[in-house]
Image 1 (cartoon, rainbow, N blue to C red):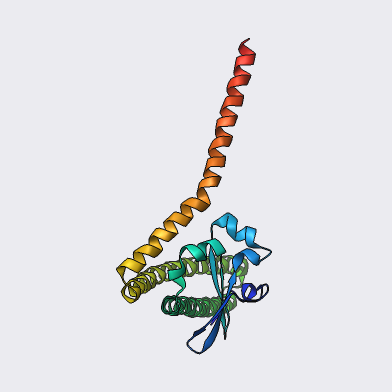
Image 2 (image 1 turned 30 degrees about the vertical axis):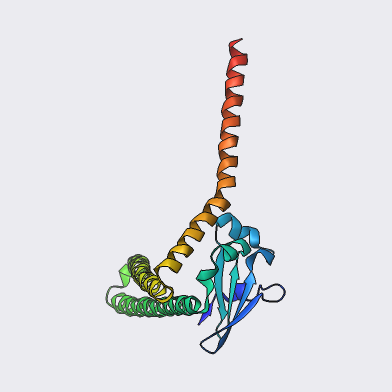
Length: 216
């Protein structure tokens, strides 16, 4: 199953770690080495799983990797890649299923419009308009339903994978990962929050100074 194949091909240099995932090769690269690292940094995204359909590559923020090494032990990688493959597979099946529904509805509407056109030729323009409206409504409805089903599946499978990881590595090791994540998030995001707060203070002080000058 391909996962973000364009990102898979953006590896820079040699992997810092190579493992096996069910007979496939799993290469790990530091996300920091990629030219587009800033894009992920702005979003606070520290890891990206990718695949070309055969092998796998993980791009991970170096600091994050060091903070939560237990999250990337082989047993956990297997569980998480199983989860990821299952979600991508389900997404593809759902997309194909609803695409067939929309295609079938389109064909049905065209046949119906053709028949009604022959029976009521004066309503050709109206039939085209109504068919278009019905088709757009159907596309929107099926798209919304697809997203709801996928979201529910992701939540369920994520919960299952998380519980399996907890059972596999033990409660203490799992808690250490959570603590490491929390500590890294605070370290990573706190400077930005401090800079933002400092900028707000400076803006308020500047506005107060302007008001004082105006009063004088």
